[in-house]
Length: 116
Length: 132
Image (cartoon, rainbow over all chains, first blue to last red):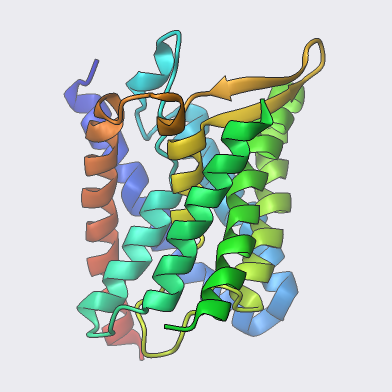
């Protein structure tokens, strides 16, 4: 179960993902367009995924049981970190975009549920 | 609200969510860490290109950025994950809320993720303020 070491690594993993995306992704895409995004996909998400879900900095003890779930992906930290960074800067909530992603999650989940 | 934009964004972000939790577990099962890293490079880049580079998730300059990560996170939370295995074909690799899994055991993780991401968001805000 949860120990202080797990709390610390989960917090650290949740900080590093949106932070690196926010610092690197936009600049790579601006400079190199689509190729910049491809570089970022491999080197930012690929590498941080190895840390967060490979080594397991983001601790998910619910996955160790027999009927494991539900999985809380690092995607949540990417969304929330970039979202609140803009809220701090005084930007408003874009309901078109927010609803798109929520309904996309509901639909993606349905497809995953229906597959096997 | 623009319903056409929302429908387009729903479909393209569902692609990201469904793609991540089918291809990723499959590549991981087949090639271990190399597979996980390759899966990131293949699905996330394609998903990013459609959702963010082509702006299918209708983000605007004056709106708070909505990342496709939200759709990806929700997909697995709700529908679990599926993988293609060498021996048994398509098998389930994780259960979600649609299967009756309780959100309770994941709640500590979710809350800590939100706290960490808020810290990152504040750091980003401060860095950008000094940067531009």
